[in-house]
Image (cartoon, rainbow, N blue to C red; front, side, top):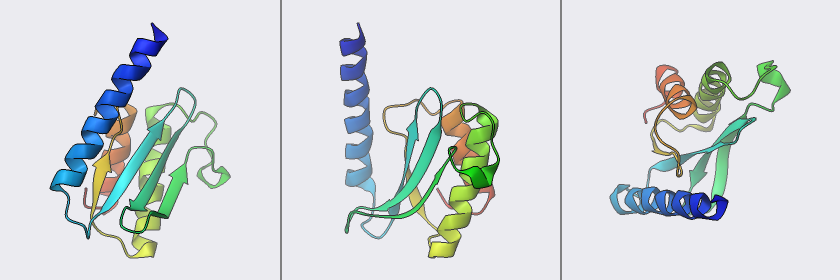
Length: 120
């Protein structure tokens, strides 16, 4: 059963990334979100050079989180990634949710980043 779930997840992930590559202009960065059962992390990636320009994770001690797997933690990570993006001079990016649904922690992170000034 686990193998089937992984296969379906990878299909959704590749479909989302294909649509981003097809529709996204080359000048816009990608906000990639990684979610696990215990933590959540976000990176802003420049696909032209393959470099990570900004990152934030619920594992960082600066955020002061005790639990990294709830919507409050995702909101903090979203605010933090928007702050670091501003410092790097990034205003616009596309949301790469991977194979996850736009719901719960993914939605909380994206909404917090938007509220903090990042144009997703």
